[in-house]
Length: 249
Length: 311
Ligand SMILES: Nc1ncnc2c1ncn2[C@@H]1O[C@H](COP(=O)(O)OP(=O)(O)O)[C@@H](O)[C@H]1O
Ligand SMILES: [Mg+2]
Image (cartoon, rainbow over all chains, first blue to last red; front, side, top):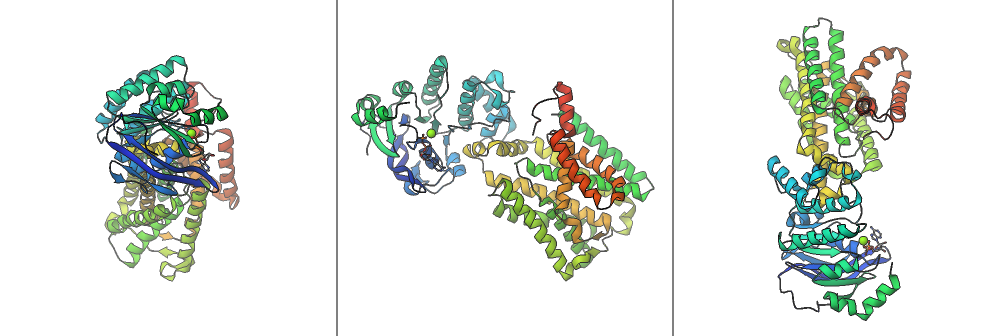
């Protein structure tokens, strides 16, 4: 299905065609095609179990698709592994266990710089810069696993940012954040896009946040693309309303 | 965790004192014991090195043996010089471990443990079945050259101490941090462009090559080697050293190896019951002092005696 909106004319960075992933008899993602364009924030929503995290695993090379194809920066990455794809600049976060719980905040971020930056000084500088951006600069020596929940979510974003992504894929980064924290995180995403020039693919359950920040939204249901379009278009789509009424948490 | 400077100073002091002792003590028995302590420390430290990526590597014992047999073959059959025959040990152990690691390190936890165990026993059986390697009775006649004879203990201890220091430096470098990250949650380093399998193999090869070198030193120290010296039990003992000393810091296995090797000199009189003692030590250490001696020191410092010990 093609995107309904023509507003975004950015060049296509990531393209999925007929993506499918089966687990035994269960089809987690089926015939899913989409494009991610340079400079946009693309939302990927859908009820629990819709196949959002599986889609992340497929595009980031953590799992091979059972069929379909993927291209990133005009290269076919369908059968490439996670190391290869992350080195090309597609960096994803994890919905669960998204950090190194037994290492310090500083070490968590430094690990993410090690592939790109070879000098220790450059790594430290990048680490400090990223920590400042994500509000972690006063917690550098804290063990990541003992950070408050909100800061843990920030750290998983910091890890991804320190790897200098072209495309940043965030898997439910707002889960468990308190009121003010949500606003701050959304401001951070806006800043990442506009000032760092990073394209964002956002999986999120918080509908208000998604509607506010995304340029376009894809809706998955039972692994299939149900609708796609601007936030207004999607929120008025009858199929989407039904899918969500059926599964509303 | 112990202050790193303290651990480093401790390592260097022990090394220097022992090198001096090995050099100047006239009693060959004491010289032997010092070399044993260092050899066991290397076994324990290399076992712990692979624990950094979260794998319990029984094949430490196998690569110790591969190093010893390589040096023995190079020295007695191929007539290589002393240093060339020693150098062959880490090279061959490194090459074999790279192949072994490339095939097996895609597995983890109990699978890797079992494979490394099986590998150790298969390699040992290979020695017993190979006439050229002396079969069950092994190989004899590895002697350092006459001119170096008086200095051999000092050379051996220097090599072993250098291995310990080298592994300490590797752990303190960014590489050590990456290894710990792999142990903690390997998806994270993978998601930021690190080649996790390659790094695991690298960790394994570093440990195997260095323990192989220690095996080469062992061949010259003992002058006699046999398949029975390289059973999986060598790795079990190394694990005992790690557990009693504590795995939170590299000083742990060194302290553990020192204490248990010295204690072992008195326990030989117990004959076969000696092994029961080591088994009891591992279980006792796991239950009573989960952080080992190093962990106790750290808990003493922070005044915290209860709660989870650091891994
Ligand atoms: N590794 C896996 N093995 C088997 N089934 C899986 C696996 N990962 C996900 N699934 C299944 O695939 C479906 C989609 O899961 P997921 O992509 O995590 O959904 P979402 O992120 O949208 O909540 C679910 O039914 C889930 O149980
Ligand atoms: Mg999910």
